[in-house]
Length: 621
Image 1 (tube, one colour):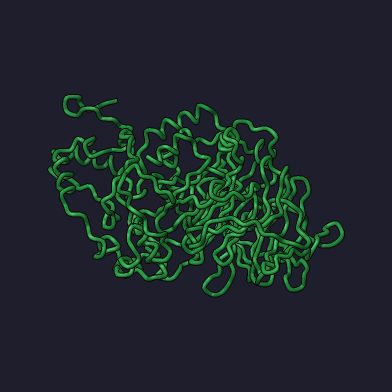
Image 2 (image 1 turned 120 degrees about the vertical axis):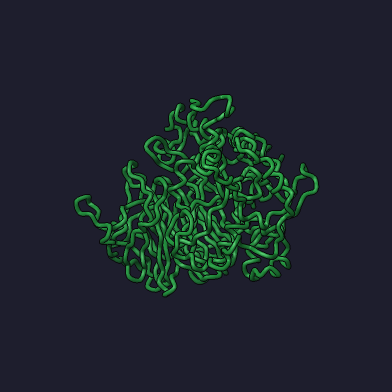
């Protein structure tokens, strides 16, 4: 309804004033004649200090963005013209806006600006969703009931999806997206380093090459500069792939550059003919900057399993892109999915997994030098004190033991109070009783200070400054298929002490997701199935959390890339002359080329075979 006179203000559309800053600007403009206040200038994104004169042709929907001329402000057009006439900012003088470079180290524990908490994105997290990307299960047959029948995405009512799509189509683009995107008109909040806080990463969604679609059952791993995502499953994409004759799982490897916040499709069936097809619930690790995967299942789940090892080399790591299936000998492990793998010395250890019917906790190892498999331990829980078979557990490693956390079968889960650990030296299983976090204990509620038993969760390990190995677990589900988790816990492997991270939690319960960590102490969580009271749907959200306080140089680099996500437009000499250390400049991808023709396509860019045609065309225009 319009409470103002039409002859004074025309065409006031309240659904375009949803953003807080725009609404405050609107109110201030109305009150200005009464209070005689100066017009508040619209702050420009700080990252414009590095912004080159690039044109982005993806902004074709003017209804989604509040432009300057939409606001009934006097003199606004004149102000915009003055800003456009200003010369472009230079690159070398400043990498941080204002005086940020002087006090960035002082913000370690100060909450400068609003904290970018993951939970704060709940109200508008669907803004940039396309209705063609709504993740709905269309009733594929012959599927694993644990993946499909229980957790199908068609549990969302059609009316709810319609309302959500309507809201998504009218919503305003979120703040601190890529400054290269002309639709981004919102100021970037001040950078504030906050450890043990979960933050949603706002990666670029309008760059050529696209980004990975919603998925579950995938695996991610991280280096110092990139995050890698391999495989996964989405019922809608599987339906589309079956019509095109493609693999029903995501037969692709993506990389995400931390500095530029951009995704890149590294490998798929187009440039790597020997990509595996068993790409759900496999295991993934990184060794000497090379990715290694083991196990996994194809679709339908459990009908075709793998015991192969594949090596992936990517252009982002400076290698010739390709996939190699290792030719191995010896006693091969059973073909199964959901195992856990660890690299100790020159051996790759694999523990547990399932064929879809049988569950094991056997231990095999592969000599990476001779490529020979060896069966080192067969678990017999019915005969001795060995751990029971399980899958979708997580493993962590302290140099002496491989700890097996959680996991379960199709209808059961194992607790995290008494943890089995494989003794690498003695070739036997040991058990360790852990200590609860008494701050969270509530006997009346049945909570004794331990994380609840779970499977299909994520886990990373990190070495603290004092040398202790710490494991962080996130999310998961219980065996009753009605209890899902959004909590984050830390386990010190030396003291066996559990700590619940009370300052961070997932926005909603999540399972079948994946997590990885970089050596600087940052954890990343990507994808998975999200649960709420109304629906269960797969996600493509990426979150990060600092598990510790890193070196000051790492914090400064994090701040620089927070304000400037286009450093790949400059050559290494320019970056080094600006004061960026060589080790950080090497984390950037190769210098991006400026295409003279707007319609020219970069031949080095791959496009996903699983994107719908509408989305694929929009990324190449």
